[in-house]
Length: 339
Ligand SMILES: Cc1cc2nc3c(=O)[nH]c(=O)nc-3n(C[C@H](O)[C@H](O)[C@H](O)COP(=O)(O)OP(=O)(O)OC[C@H]3O[C@@H](n4cnc5c(N)ncnc54)[C@H](O)[C@@H]3O)c2cc1C
Image 1 (cartoon, rainbow, N blue to C red):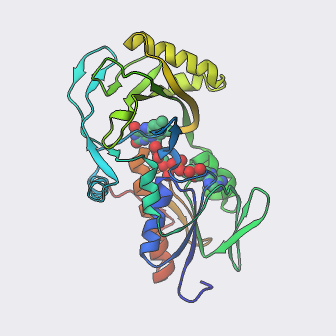
Image 2 (image 1 turned 180 degrees about the vertical axis):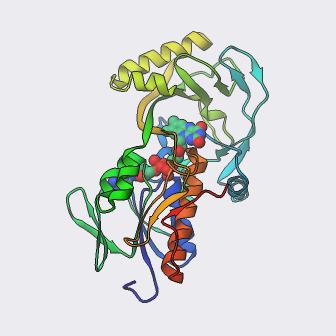
Image 3 (image 1 turned 120 degrees about the horizontal axis):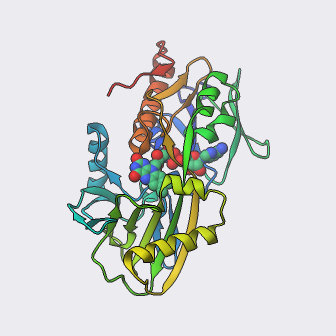
């Protein structure tokens, strides 16, 4: 601690796990600096411009899950960031099924992470390439080898493959990150000039190409032209991982038309490959915290995985950091999942 009583903490990654951790640490009096290589926040909760509107290009909505996560989702509804959504739901075989209750962002998914860190210091478009413990603290360097700051603790909140090079200073964590497999996902977002002649808002189930089709413009609070986000299956995405976006777009559009009939004219379209979309077989621990080096790791490769895993992991790591650095009590290096 170099600055009186204030702990300087760096969080690398402004996705859900990193922003949840940053929120907790800010609330507990730390001076938090977040770094993200992207232009904004959200990570896999990203939204992008499509013509005059915005679409959710990553996670399309949250589903109800464990008690703590649910309670937190409900608080975001009370704050007006998320809304309950009951999309009209059809299976790929055409059967209509009961609408699930899900949570969709009222404006765009990335508004959630943005609101969590509204009072934290965010340095965007900054890719960190080195995290190194020293006597003065932990140094961060960017990809041009420029010093990005020195901190009392560093939290790495990136997908596992992107955490590997950041863990050169903590070999025991590096090997854990290197063993994690993450699936890719191709996503195509499109705007139609005329709305599709169908009331359906969510299509899922078994399909050769698709995992899920979401009518983004039907989410609560959204306006404007009919917009769809088509998400390919993980195995199909893996098979087409190295294909060009144009080719993948053509294949996804053909499959979409095979399902729903000829499409009205498309005014805007974008195809994106998520190289790291879903973590395969995540760790059961909630996070990793190295008390000797003051470096920790969280994200969706812990706590059972998925977006709820990212939430639980970010929170658990932030709690560990506070417990370890403020009380001076010895803590376990690995936090076990408590259920
Ligand atoms: C299309 C899609 C659909 C999904 N559907 C579901 C679903 O239905 N259910 C579910 O549970 N999960 C789903 N997921 C997964 C879910 O979105 C993720 O598990 C969760 O959002 C991960 O959050 P995170 O904070 O761990 O990581 P991320 O959101 O990946 O955040 C990591 C951040 O770190 C930044 N970063 C990486 N390296 C560096 C570096 N060196 N320097 C600086 N910044 C760096 C990245 O830019 C990113 O912003 C889906 C994901 C996608 C893409």
